[in-house]
Image (cartoon, rainbow, N blue to C red):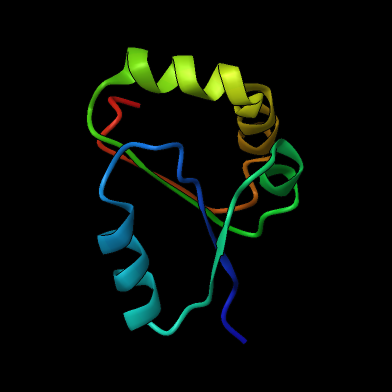
Length: 86
C-alpha cells in the first residue's frame, strides 16, 4: 500500500504541478488545511517559490509553523520542502 501524501498549500508555489506529479506517481493527495493535519500526516510535500521570509509569515499566520517543527522533530516521516532555502 502506498502512503498518502499531504500537500501543504499556503498560497505560493506551483501546487498544481506538484499535485499532478504526485498523482501520476500513483499516490493519493490530501490538502493540508489545519495544523492538526500536519501533525497527522504520513508524508508532507511543501512546495515554495524561494521566498523564505514571505513563506514564514504565512505559516505563522495560519499556525502551521509550530506544527511543522513538531512534525520534523519526529524524523521518522518523509518531508520534502521545495525551493524554500530550507
